[in-house]
Picture 1 (cartoon, rainbow over the protein chains, first blue to last red):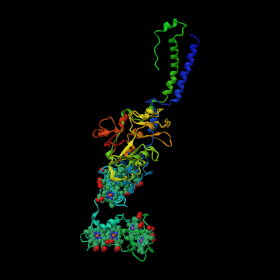
Picture 2 (cartoon, chains in turn cyan, yellow):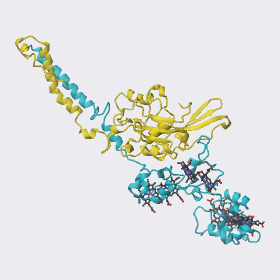
Picture 3 (cartoon, rainbow over the protein chains, first blue to last red):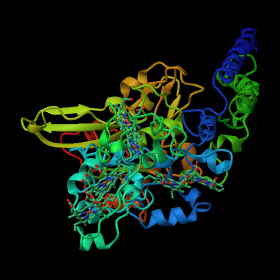
Picture 4 (cartoon, rainbow over the protein chains, first blue to last red):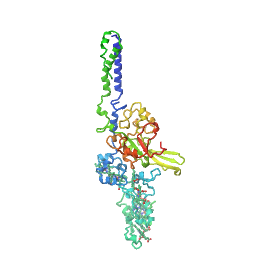
Length: 242
Length: 271
């Protein structure tokens, strides 16, 4: 065998081994196992944590609500659409609570009128549809029905009802301030409902020490507007302060 | 590395002692190669085969082929899908980064087409300008089409984006070099460069949910069933029914990308 053959062979072997070493260093592990990519990348992607638990998860612990929803107009609206991602809550139900969105904004996302929405989808004009009142006060969010208008009082006192509906007192029912016997509807002039008679009545919500929601504006009952009754200055069905 | 038997002519070689014969050279070379073979073997198969299957226990990617049906006539444009997608997949909050988004089409009486998608639709859509000139208007959800013939995968110079056995186009964030070729190549605008990670971002069909038997987050939250997710090829599935009873279309079919997002009731103006 001539000398140059083993030498050439040695050079060749070094080159080939060098190539393989370089390749094994440059090509990452698992590349090419499944295709022209790193198979291990799939493991990384699969390990991504989940935020949304999925509606199946909620039934176990919230069966009444889940069943109510499943039979309602909202059967397609999954829990986490309104309550937000709840995988953390499922893992730790007592420590981590999902949001409970009581604002009108939530419902308006889907139900506000838009000409681009498919015809037939129930829509309302949020500006005129019972403004100021929380939607959940009239529509059960887990089983909403288009409720029958409570026409009893508004049928005859339409103007007052309409005014009240757009006022700061929108969330108050007639019954909060008037006790109307059934007979009033049959014989309205003969049987009259009660009307608030004293300043202290309004004070049950508005006095500085009243036990009512914190967002209700307060006055000093003893000095404010004395010596008149409140409704001599504020129309009770449309109270204005400014 | 194929090794051919070299016995037949060995005797002839031996007698022809000193001449540098091509056969002998080849044999030496072969020897050198087989010496190097273990190195090559070590280089490629050093990871246990189980880890390289790339999925969680009990999940066999070869048993699935995923696609999504979208019924345009059911979409109310509430964009809960966009919000859910961003939350589930850590997509940056800022506009311009979306794995899925909602477009509003407004087609005017003079055939002018306006398309907008302010912040993907998350904050709602502003009132339509000049409502009197509107002929028709509707919402179209968009996302990665998970093409069977994906241009983004073809252009990737390093093999950092790929299509899985179950038909999902994914990005290897540990390997992507952020060169933007795929962003340019995608005809659907479904990719972006993640502003912090500096790698390509896109819809994964929530692959981490699929392997656990859950549907993608956008499908989970869609209130009207406008998104139908499932197996493309099996017969008795919601997606198969959807494709049987609707005239389905794909976007930009002429590009031969073979998309797997199937649209029903799609207006001819949608691009």
